[in-house]
Image 1 (cartoon, rainbow, N blue to C red):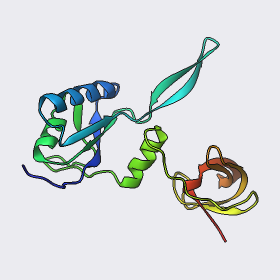
Image 2 (cartoon, rainbow, N blue to C red):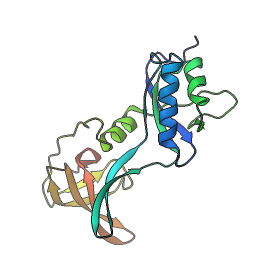
Image 3 (cartoon, rainbow, N blue to C red):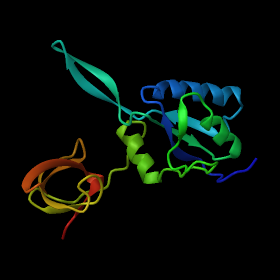
Amino acid sequence: MAVESYDKQWYVLHTYAGYENKVKANLESRIETMGMTDYIFRVIVPEQEVEVEKDGETKIVKENDFPGYALVEMIMTDEAWYVVRNTPGVTGFLGSHGGGSKPVSLLPDEVDDMLARMNIVERKVADLNVEVGESVKIVAGSFSGMQGEVTAIDNDKQEVTVLVDFLGRETPTEISFNDVESVL
């Protein structure tokens, strides 16, 4: 059995949009029937619960964060790659250039962030030693590299509200403790 890496890693699958959960079910079934439980471990569709108001009622529904994608935790062997790639509904791997090339795995920080957002694992939160009125530098996310003033701190959510200059206006933005650092 040819093995790219003996470490289990996370990979992103392309699927037909709207068929992510069907692909998950198909792949989980194939893992069992084809004896791949030692090589393919978990299949996850990146979803989160959101509140939706309809007809005056508030309901909690699962919303797909990345339509057309699913995540698979696996050891990249030729056989495991073949099983996943040939699962009905899977159109390929993200980071594979075709022609039999193996895909690139996600970075551990990317996986940790995604699993934490889906409440599958608790993300380790950095200790943030700032106070309202102090400046912070944003080190991750859409505003990475920007600086702003802290206007509020929410220890329960482990977020700070930072005023960032967005299109010439100061815009309050909630950012995780992990995604900012103090500017001294």
